Image 1 (tube, rainbow, N blue to C red):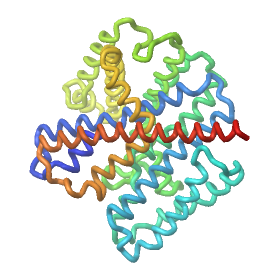
Image 2 (cartoon, one colour):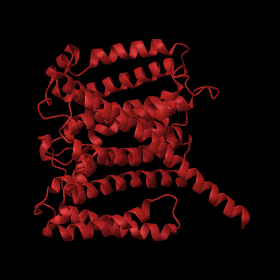
Image 3 (cartoon, rainbow, N blue to C red):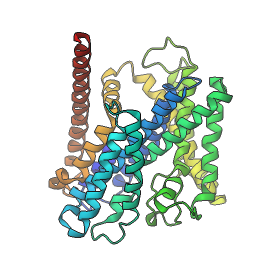
Image 4 (cartoon, rainbow, N blue to C red):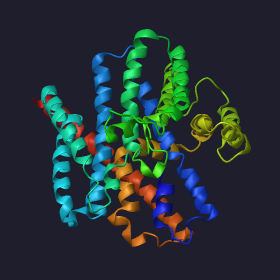
Length: 401
């Protein structure tokens, strides 16, 4: 993610389109599917076989929080980075959006000192207000599409909400973890196979902004705000959940870098990598399949990323024990992923990135991207340390009371 975003934002315009630039774009394309898969994996790992209503509600609140953060980042980018605050006809939209966003933050933020009833009231009042505001932005003079476009956080939040409800339902009818993982795989590929029936179709009477969460209703990708709609991106989250469910069925005495169900993770990495290479979208097999049936494109992509994910697991399991610092650094950034996502975007595309925007060659960019990655690790460590100190103070205050 950081590699591609910094390459896209910092490299000189003359470099864009070059062979190496396109390779960076290809590598960056792994980020979103992996994020969606890992989100599903995490939720599946933390969800018991028969989730309670409280556990499912908590998962839905977390999904809502991810969506709220997505909208907050878009509002900040539009207001500050794209200077909407300087355009008079944007003032009403900014003020109403801030009011709605404040209510949604208070409704979905965890932990909260508000009662459940107050949070529900805030959510019920704030969400329709934000939806109303975003349904009337076409007349704005400052890039309204920046404000309303659904990016990866919106897609992750929506997918997590659907997955939480799916796991709740499966907990009542499929109590076996291995059987459940198979069901989740079938559902994942079912989503991608069904995607062609939704793309370009009318989803009336759903409002446009809500329909964008379901599927891309315009045949032209650039004409729709649905960059990460449930069809097909939910498939990646369901696939991650299948892997997480299978991990729950694995032995509990595994070391942190072990790969379940195999004593030779390098073999898993090698086989999965070969399958991924065979299914790569630019390869002859994928081209042959999609040429014969364009509707299978999303399914082939899902199979490719599933193989790539298993390949990464195998290779990281092979080298993880030997390169512990790599594992620790990735883990820190993963645990603070929302913070890292927002901070690196501002440094790549925001005001803080203006001094290097479109000004760097390959060597300067490589150094800058490495420094930014290290700074995100440091930021994640600092955030985790701060949260630990706050938790310790709260615990000491309760004990003293």
